Image (cartoon, rainbow, N blue to C red; front, side, top):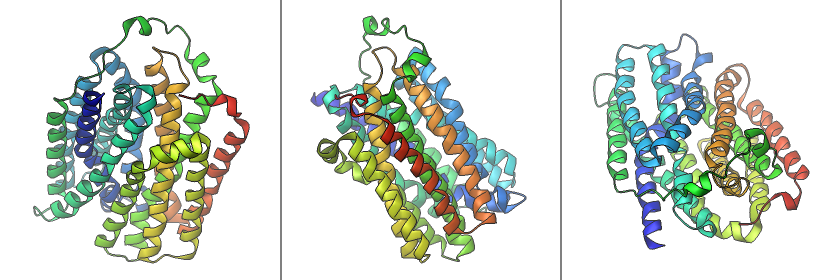
Amino acid sequence: MQSRFYNVGILSLSNAFGFAVTSMMMLIGSLLGAELAPSENWATLPIAIMVIGTACGVIPVTRLMAKLGRKYTLSIFLLLSASTCLVASYSVVIKSFELFCFCAAMIGVSNAALQQVRFAAMESVSPDKATTAASIVMLSGVAAAFIGPELAVYGRSLTGVDYQGSFWLVAACSVIAALILTQFTPAPINTSQEAQSTRSLREIISNPGLQLAVVSGLIAYVVMSFIMTGTPISMHNHHGHSLEDTKWVIQSHIAAMFLPSLVTPLLFNWVGIRGMMLTGLLCYGITIVIGLIDSSVMGYWSQLVMLGIGWNFLFIAGTSLLPRTYLPGEQYKAQAFNDSIVFSTQAMASLSAGWAISVSSWQTMLLICLLPIAVMIGRLIRTKPNDIPRP
């Protein structure tokens, strides 16, 4: 078992460097979008396109993993991410919004591969340790939360063109992540189990437990992306808070997305999947309340931290439930369906955030988030306790 958790450690370390590209884009993607786009209404388009790239990349990535394995597929897309960052640095030089959006899409495709790291970690340990393995990988996001934004700010003035150096630095992070991944030993595939999978996708997704897992991940990302994508513009452009304060809030938010993974396995054992989901929704509710009454730096910080914690609980609950809802050999079908749905809707949330922040107030954006929260509550009510399998 020790060697298996060594694999989890390698995946986590690699993910910390690989995810730095995404965390950097969370901070400067919409800021660069506002600078390069013909209208501020399109400022969040690069972030939305990045998420669309993730959604579009899920099925090709999972199919490639089924043929080449997780290790080699992850390495390929980490190197793609590094190359894309170099092209993105050039798009900033020539001030091409179109090329920058293309690079955002390619970063999103690479991120689709990184999203599979949690499943690779869960496959490396016994089923009763799967939640712990997923939580350890999620903790690597804490490091990425600081690496990406710090490199964004440090690299901003590295050359005569704002943020050109930032993309150079995160390109190096992707290469480092690929090098670390060479030490990963994938879990052996049981070919006899793989051959047992004969059910169609429609049969697989008819499981109410799987539907709850997908909806939990979907709502986690929709609310988080809608609020987080609009935060830099609302803070920096509309309320006049400094870039340093905006960076700190985004860093704190990303850290809050992953840091709760230190206690998530304990909480998971205490309250179960349904309790985790309800706790996550409660955190989202607190986020909205804080945002409605306080637009100071600390107000933004408090609501973005609660937003991150809520995302963690909802996402890990859905991730832990998903492998229990399908048969051996169906993992690539089920995981591809889950991530395609989750990241497609996340893309819509990210894109609509730019329009919403330009035509309405920050408080209105927060109130809109009550709709997906209500959808999640409805799904929980309709799902019977027997529909949630035990490990």
